[in-house]
Every structure is written in C-alpha cells, then in structure tokens.
Length: 196
Image 1 (tube, rainbow, N blue to C red):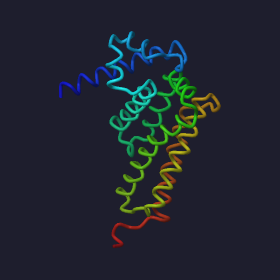
Image 2 (image 1 turned 45 degrees about the vertical axis):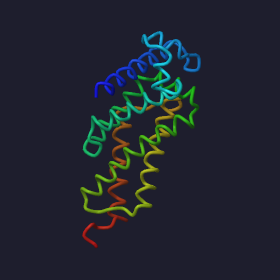
Image 3 (image 1 turned 30 degrees about the horizontal axis):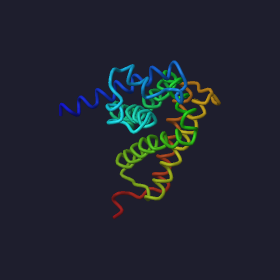
C-alpha cells in the first residue's frame, strides 16, 4: 500500500507540473526535462510512470473523469454533474485548449466519448432499475452512444471556442433532454422486468 500511495503522489506531482507549464506555453513545446525539473524528480521516474507526455495528459483527464464518478450520484444529481463539467471546462480552458491543439479534435473527442459513454450508461441502467423496465441491448447501446456523442460534440465546440454556452440553460436543457429521452424510450420500447 505504501508503494501505491507514493506512486500516486509522484503521478500527481508530474500532473501538476504539466498543468503549470501548459499555462505558460503550448503543449507541443513542453519537454519531459521541464516537467521533471519543475517537480523535482528524475527522467527515469517520469518514464517509469508514463510512456510519454501524451500519456501523462491522458492520465490527468482520466483522473478528472474518475472524480466525477466518485463525487456524484449520476442519476440523482445530473444537474450537478453537468455543472461540474461546465465549470471544469471554464477553469481549465488553457489546459483543454492545449490538449485540443496537441491531440487534434478527433483524439481528444475519442477520449471524452469514453467518459461520457460511461456516464450515460450509468444513468440509463439506473433508470431501468428505478422503472422496472429495461431496454433491448442494441437500443441501450445506441442511446448511450447518442447521448455521449451529443454531449461530447457540444463540449468540443465549447473548448474550441465555436459555441458559447449559457451555464444554466445548458444544465436545464441537457438534463431535460436526457431524462425525457431515457424515460420515453423505457416506456415506448422498454420491456417490463415482470414480463418473463
């Protein structure tokens, strides 16, 4: 356990150094040498934990996505989840813009899609449990992909500066669409758990 805690501490230090450097210069111009110098570890330590700087950046986003899943009940608090995501984008605009420029929109979008798919699936499955109805597997997968593509597309537009989001309207509209789409499909195409 001690080793895992030390490893996580090192990863977090490397992540903070990368974030700090990304506030000052474009991501492609940042070097491993600068990161390790900033957080006081050697190059071997960096490469022990991460394959390259891109892997470190991916790890940062994975940790943020994990935080959402741990902190919120996705079914009971969708407004808070969407608010958290919007606030995260606003507070980390430089980091996200650098990642957008470094990865390109497709790679960054692929990363976010994985996270949003997991969130959508959690909400859909909890809705199924609460209503006692379940969607056919193919429809559930399609719905989760649809919701995550829509959310991700809006977020990517916001990151790139192409879409100006009004925070409260985005929260209200997103939760309204998600709830009504899921509920409507469950009652229109869902199968009652008691129908076996």
